[in-house]
Image (cartoon, rainbow, N blue to C red):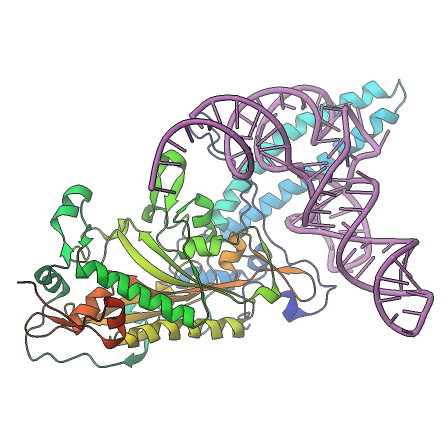
Amino acid sequence: MAIPRRPAPSREARGGPGEGRGATGVGLARAGRRDSRTRPKAHGRSRLVMLDIAFIRQNPDVVRAAITNKRLALDLDELLAADKERRETIAKLEQRRARKNEIAAAIPKASKEERPKLIEEGKAVKTELETLEPALTAIQRRYDDLMLRVPSVPRPEVPVGKGEEDNVEIRKVGTPRVFEFEPKDHVALMTDLGLVNWDGPRRYAGGRSYALVGMGALLELAVTRLAVDTLVERGLTMVIPQVMVKERALTGTGFFPLGREEAYEIGADEMFLVGTSEVPLVSMHCDETLELAQLPIRYAGISPCFRREAGAYGKDTRGLYRVHQFTKVEQVIFCAPDEEVAEKEHYQLLANAEAILAKLEIPYRVAIACTGEIGLGQTRKHEVESWMPGRKAYSETHSCSTLGDFQARRSNIRLRLADGSLGYPYTLNNTAIASPRILIPLLENHQNDDGSVTIPKALRPYLGGVDVIRPKR
RNA sequence: GGAGAGAUGACCGAGUGGCCGAAGGUGCAUGACUGGAAAUCAUGUGUACCCGUAAGGGUACCGAGGGUUCGAAUCCCUCUCUCUCCGCCA
């Protein structure tokens, strides 16, 4: 059997308006944690729509393969059983409710003699409902939990693999420079050039903290502005979003529940700091129905990003490679639910990032991530890795993803299709620039034997014309 | 932070216990009329889930959650959001 082209066959592709509604799962409001003394908020409706349950039922093997290949721990049979139980409970419950409605409608019309009997039955039905309703709530909650862990199905071109070593390099651009002197790593360079203060921030903010100082700070402003200008020139709409968000934004974009440990929580207000502006940019349209004519929507967001790096204790602790707070310019696309369109957008996002690296004269390579390295919602991901002489390796600086309708479903972002029916748009995203990480290849690649750093031409206008950063005497 | 007002379908807006999935209007769609259009008239016009090959049937939804009742848009409680005034503030 051929792998279906998309997780949810869209009506467009299947034809006529007479087509049945694409089945979609709607989660009941998550009624957990109802202790109103400790958790007083019950915000809005939280309708969570995941991978189409009808699709899962009809293509369990496809979904099972996605789970295996993405190396996720989800028992699909448990989900299918929960789905079955859920539907049976719904059927029973609705049957009783129908009777309840019948009785309620009959009472005003009933004769004096009939009435007490009906009221008695009504009471009995009510009692039945009182046990059925909590039963449904419980099974629905279990079902929702499982549904949130169902991955999107990777595109056919994604290589099956376990880890980084199974990513497939697609191309190398530029050649790593051969130094005729012993190059410094960015830590030494930046320390010697006075671009960063390490110790102060570590005293007041702990590990992985830093402060960009002087030219270091100006450099971050310069590279981000260069990225912004590049994207605006290429037709993206600049957005400066809210970076404090409610849980639903993180669930909606697919970061929760699996990535919960990665986010900083602002406990008192039940808010979270985002790890990327992808979260607010996608969520900006949650609960909306987009029109086909609005698409594609192309955003460029700039924001501080916050990551706990919970799974990375002791990893990359030196320098600016892996830090808790950084600045990122991110690209986010909403497009029509069409694989060809999405593919085009995907490669455009990739091209935008590459154009920025070219301006910064940084050698890089592009790899397609294997199934084991792509996230729950991603159907395809490319990594752009910049050459970092200090690490003697290409290391990730950009990540370009297509998510199909995964985020749109979870975020309840719908799309009015050509035939008038409702579908879901596709979403994509890619880094444009993330600083200070990008400063690593920027400074390391352009360093000189006297400890100075030459600024690439394209960046100079953003630094008031400075062409070389020299150690202060 | 203090005081008050509000939340009903795409929009406006009525509705204080059963006849309300919800009047009326606007908008939109289709048809009639027209040489064409406007106007007019008629009809239709939400979302989601469950059962069903389908036709169709059922359930839920009047900001959210809970309660009272045989029966809740309507009564009670809690919360969220919006608006106004005061205070504070970049």
